[in-house]
Length: 257
Image (cartoon, rainbow, N blue to C red):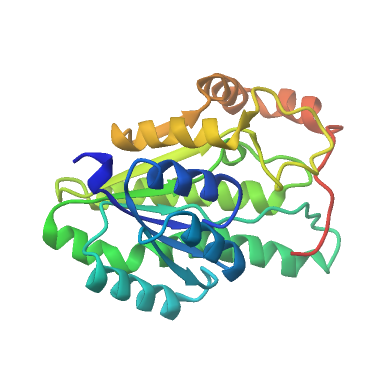
């Protein structure tokens, strides 16, 4: 199907990678369901692409709201061809601080349960139609646990495993599952990182590469490919070597979400 005919759903569509992906598809004629918490930014996107954006202000932790939005979009436009679970949050956490428990739970709720709740309203519909692509934005941070980022690394590792389970469950159904593990992307989320970010991509370039992986229905894509090589090396490092290398690494600042 040409991109001008695509119906696409994207969560976290008001900023960063989500907004870049939204613009990528809209500029190629797609019809978009844009889901995010910031109504003002969604309205701006809608005004930029008149008649092409159906926007829904909500938090992906609200399963009932996601179900309602899915039903509304399907009734108005039809079954989406692509659903991108992109919404995510990141903050530094340390287990020794009791106050970080709440931040840890929020990260897991958004990055893992939010992905599940984004897909759930569409799975049965897509299975019945025997078509559709579910795309989960995970991260290379899920390959190994990063110091000071226990919540984020754990959430992305969980997302990777969840997406693999879903892919196997839907094998042969006509519904494809694409796991995307980006490296560093220049967004507000990474702007506070106090450490070097090798192979960092601008959001627009990352969106272009991710859209290409989605079009190819690549089961597991690491973007950019250099981070895939780096991640593979880190994944297979013996624990004592990995621990020694990363014990003193700079850490993402702790904070509130």
